[in-house]
Length: 140
Ligand SMILES: CC[C@@H](C(=O)O)C(=O)SCCNC(=O)CCNC(=O)[C@H](O)C(C)(C)COP(=O)(O)OP(=O)(O)OC[C@H]1O[C@@H](n2cnc3c(N)ncnc32)[C@H](O)[C@@H]1OP(=O)(O)O
Ligand SMILES: [Co+2]
Image 1 (tube, rainbow, N blue to C red):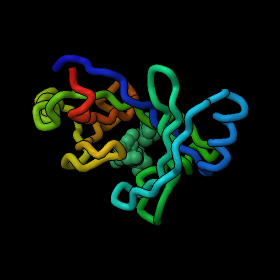
Image 2: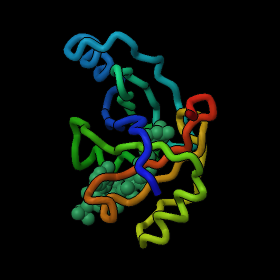
Image 3: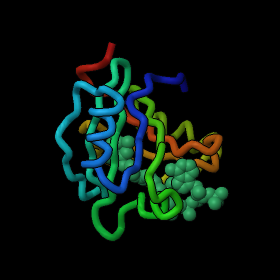
């Protein structure tokens, strides 16, 4: 596999509203999207645009949110995952499985409308890693 573009850095937060104020007022973010719910992923999401990458704010949604454990250990929130793009999600998944890495579930549709999967941080140098298929319009 060839390392692809860094699409976003996931940042878990107990309050998207408070994080939006921080990125706008302290960090000077000029483009911040509207928050939206992704019940299938157990999170509310909001994208903050930096010139070269997005920050993905994620707040727990529902009792089974996968970020409850992280926020229990990091109550103020913090950097949660890195997301890299790949041209073919199934090839990428098979690659990580061949490396012996723990792939967390089947590909499912993520916040950008293309399939994603996660690889366990224990097998990824301590970084929870999201792999995302590049949207068709963004392919070169
Ligand atoms: C918005 C939609 C989508 C997108 O399109 O972009 C998203 O990004 S959704 C983002 C949220 N979804 C997910 O994170 C799904 C995948 N994650 C999981 O399945 C779980 O979070 C997990 C990775 C299996 C962790 O589960 P959890 O129950 O919280 O923790 P464990 O007790 O199992 O932890 C084991 C081990 O891993 C360490 N850990 C946990 N989370 C992270 C993290 N984010 N970064 C680095 N390390 C992490 C945890 O501290 C434990 O370490 P040890 O104590 O040393 O064993
Ligand atoms: Co993400």
